[in-house]
Image (tube, rainbow, N blue to C red; front, side):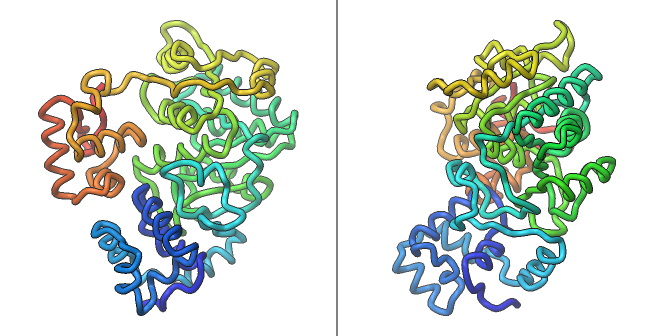
Length: 375
């Protein structure tokens, strides 16, 4: 067993290994209740402290579930050996754009200084992009980097890879937000690009060292990509998938959203065309993007995309169903365990509720047992 965490960084590392959006809400609630001295919940007086702070039963249960056998010394040694930094919520270096979102990270591992979001643009799109889309992503990133903007993306094959490469080609800065730990290169085909970004750019993740990836990792990561930027550009996407989740995150976070049109009838352009119809700004060249970036952002409603809400509005759901619906709306396809954790539900209750929602046609389950909203 490790000793009690001593200080904000230690406490945040322990909370962070437990993860989940619910974990961030718990962390922030305890942080605020204790005036920032969150490590006190691990001390000998923790039971009395929780009673005095009037922590709910659910919050106390979450605190009891924290992995006190987590080897803090080993994790901090890995951070130092990698040349990285862990920045917890409450630290002066913690990005304000992360603090502003409800499901922000408890802390982030980073290999360098994160650029001001006003000078950062996210470029996202399909892994199965066309040559046309890959070329545009590279050219747009090159042009924006040449004009002093940092390019942020997710290091995936396709549009992400082309965007990172375009920024590097211009001698600019790029940030890769990873779906796993800093030491976990995914996809392995991008190892050379990963090494180059580690050398001259910035790697960012909320996952501890050794943390691999699963399907849920990518949609959860997307909210950080858009939060780091003042604007998001979508280049080639189907009407479902990670890029559409990124688009929704951008509008929920109050960021500018742009989309690139493509050939009519091309499946990889359908998502972009839908985004444009729903209010995203159509862009076709770097000059148009720069014009949008330099404009004051007008007040606008959150982008409304087709969801299960079009079939069954949330107001028709009970408390548990609404919590599950919101998680899937936010993160896309997830496992039962992830849904239960993020929705703050007991796994058995979550599984039973999901089953009923599937029977009623609200949700659907794929062959891997993961759940999504039925379109």
